[in-house]
Image (cartoon, rainbow, N blue to C red; front, side, top):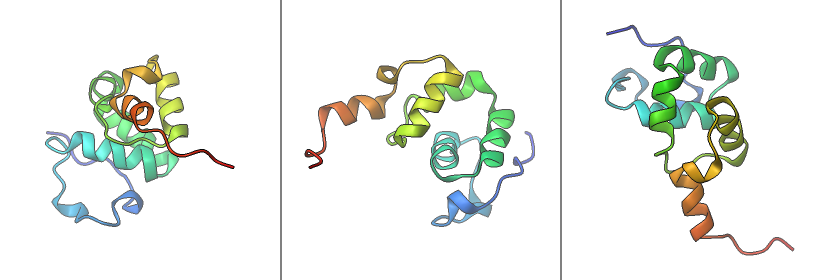
Length: 98
C-alpha cells in the first residue's frame, strides 16, 4: 500500500484525518478534496488514485459543487448526466432565484 498522499487537512476539518483509510474511504476522500481542498490537494489525489480510478468512483459522489462538477467533466471526459449528484440535482431543483 502506498503512503498517504501529501494533502492538507483543510477539507477534513470535521473528521479525524489520522484515522482515514485512503483505500476504504476513497470516494469520501475524493469528494472532500475536490469540493473543499486546495489545488495542490487535488493534484495529489489525482496522482495517488489515478484518473481511471477517480473516473470510476467519483461518478457515485452524493454531492459535488457545480464548478467541481464542470472541472471533473472536463478532465475525465464525462458529461454531467454521468454523475449521480447531477441527476439528484435535476430531480430536486431549488426554488427560483429572484
